[in-house]
Length: 609
Image 1 (cartoon, rainbow, N blue to C red):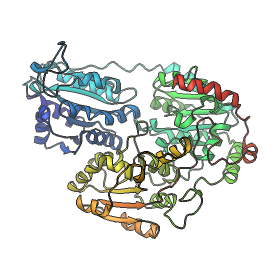
Image 2 (spheres, rainbow, N blue to C red):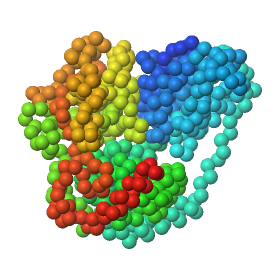
Image 3 (cartoon, rainbow, N blue to C red):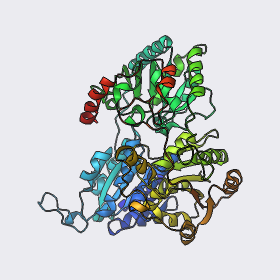
Image 4 (cartoon, rainbow, N blue to C red):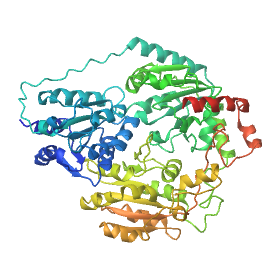
């Protein structure tokens, strides 16, 4: 059996429906074998970076292995950005890279390159994969495929890579004789987990102001019973952006998002908690703020993570993890659900009342207006658009969002109540992610409608993939958030460099198409305009009544601000625009953050982060 035919059969056995790639000389046998199979599709992308991201988007949508295939050299190195997305967000993907024939490999010779387009792919990808290997003996292909697949899904999931020289791709193998891989059995310490959960329940029973944080880790892999546990505990819930779809918008325990660009009510809640239970989140500085010692400063912090290094990373850097529970979220929720008595729920009446009072007294995060100063009349209000979009997306809709302003506005305004799923590359956040990721998701058999939200800057990075959408008639609604700039960068330069704009809008060096209607037409897509004169309800209803791909140009104010936002040097409760000490002091339960601590932790932050 030809080696690449064996790889194809393996992927089919694992339920993989498609692979994404861009053809090249060192990968022709991989493409040929998949093309000849009736059980898996080979999807042609216009750029290898987009192939890796499409594989990532497919894996997020399906829970299956996402696969990308490229040639050697530049084909392989172009996979890096997408692989980083999968690595940092714990997404199981497989990168299959072609390589020069074995007799053209430089080996230990002290030259930069021997074969044409030869590149040491394994060394480059090792830091951003869970497993990276080059095949040197065709009879080891089963072992390495099975090992890579097992590692991609075990523990904390992530990407893997197999580099295959051209001559070995076409080698004949005897499938009865090739070595198989035997994974080590899971070593779950039941007593440890039970004891840790019992200690956690004791802490909960003593707490007056507990908070649960739900993050994207509950989706990689998907945990099914967390809602039952949340409801039994009755503890107010905060969401990371990656976890924004984990409970319905109108759920009685949902507070909202929190963090640097998060909601004020979320930030005031986490800052005044006396117990923080972090589930499925690594508590990045986008959530805690840059001054780590100011985060939840009077709370005991409990962090549940399968990766002990994520828990231990805070030692000496300002955040104390009082209880770190090292186990999978699946095991955690299975165990804790059995230990919560049906009458366990503590009411936390005064704490919940305080949260509701704060919601009433804090300024509305979304009243800054389309121009940042409260004037919504002359421009489309991005928050109105996102809210109306929420009402019109279909049940179980998959929504892929890019990065920058469009991600911030979406996560802070979207109302998810119909089992919709929200995806982005939360930790790598490259511009140009959401379109190829949507393409990947669209090729799974269960998806009939998808929403892609992308900024005009991000679209320019992956513009060519519009032809992939058109050619395959993919049911993607592409919403271009058009502010003719890199808006989040403009605001950063206004905050820190006196508004000295460089390469962030057209006057400072960027260039954008003059007419997106012509762009859409050139790529064979129907064009729709949304601006301040549009009846959002009617227009979005028409858009979502259609099953064909659409390009929707959403024209917003060019200087739309991203508020509220935390400036470095301040605790989470002091976001811009500042609300004033009078309101803040009335609402805060814990002591104000001591400014002397800021100097200490600025030094710590620079050295350690």
